[in-house]
Length: 273
Image (cartoon, rainbow, N blue to C red; front, side, top):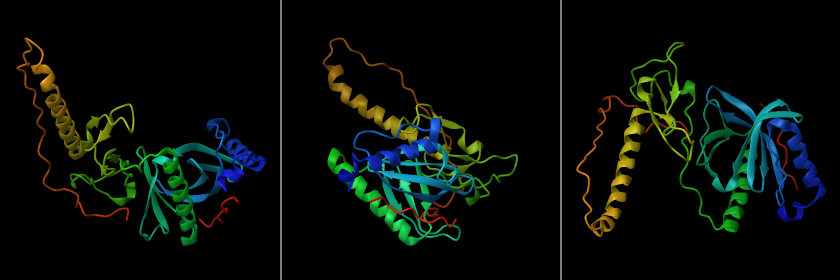
């Protein structure tokens, strides 16, 4: 179907229509070989509350955005390369049904469909496109994924110290490593995670210690690899300096590790054929 539609006028018109809906705020979507396969409205689990979002499935990317006027105007365009996507089906909750998680190295989030059939349609077509792309490029499926943010309303207290109660004056924060909702005292550290951002990001104290330990371990491994080279250099003397960085112990009470967080009547727009 993709090869059949790739260079057709109807496909070009469909892609142009999506570009027009996003307007100047969106990026150009028309590239050689790209095909618009399907579209529809899904409910995205956002930080504050679930919100409807328009999604467009192409053969190589997934595009979504906020709805200003349905079928006419969208904004806040996001483009996700499909070869970076992994899907995970989730159980229903009281608030949201027919859920699944879209996981990527930069961002992961939960969406829900209006019906079980619609969810099956989305997942089936997404997986087919991902399989085709990975086969074409020879890449392996992505194994590193950003943690989805726990919604603010999931907890009234800090999920690390379990002592601080959130209020109008006491803000919630999110650790960019684990996605937990934490207080300011439990997330004062910043750590550089290049796959997420070129700038250091807020992380909770526990994740910071784990990340620092991993960084130290990597540095020690690099030093061991350099030893044969250093020993071969005449007159080389290693530095006598020894830096150590010890962190405070974790607070005794921690959020239970086994707690599970992720396990509108708009008609479905059929996949284009």
